Image 1 (tube, helix red, strand yellow):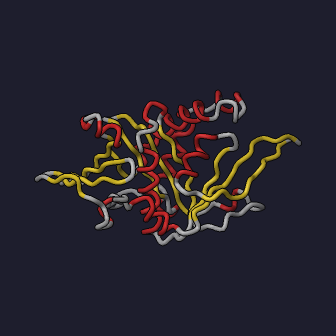
Image 2 (tube, one colour):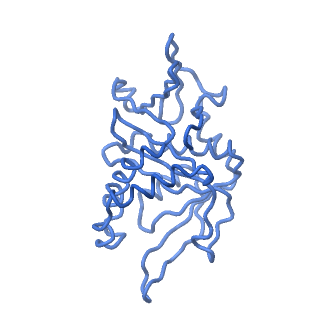
Image 3 (cartoon, one colour):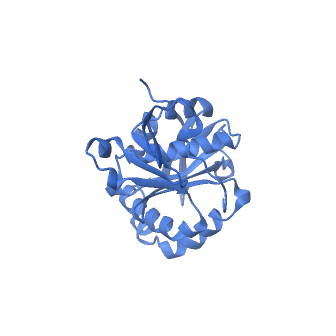
Length: 245
């Protein structure tokens, strides 16, 4: 990923309705987000809610993740896990999460160009508020429950204070477009059992409910997961990126 060139998903197609243009910026609208691609190559994102309220100054910025983002990603992961998985994951697991311990893992992963990782980060000012990671399907994690897809969403988290602004869909769109560009044809992911917010999000994005998985440890159920699948990745990209008129 280091030094990789990135073209935002929105300008990939002529199907996007332009909503503004000036000497420095071209703007598009799609889904719940509006995009401004600036001449300096940066991309600005704001939600439909923010646009209606005139909160353009609160626009978000989206870019490829780099190893330098490892610390911020680790901190946001710990915060989101503790907020999202309370009561779903044992308390001692959540309390033992440590961003300092997680950071080297993220730095190594983001710097591994052979991993085929697709990683995006979203900032509000200089504060990381969302991130998404995807790549080749990791069926070795569950050899008895393989998903018949070739790509996987590994993580997609949005800071609790910035949810319901379209950022999750925006990052999902970028990841899906990048995966298609890499040649992937289908997509899957695992959602922790009981995570109703996550299940609802992926169902709204037309995810097909897949198999369930139960992890047994010491003769007890440790956790449950449910898979969501998108067998046709190009069709999914079209649903994400083409705005109805």
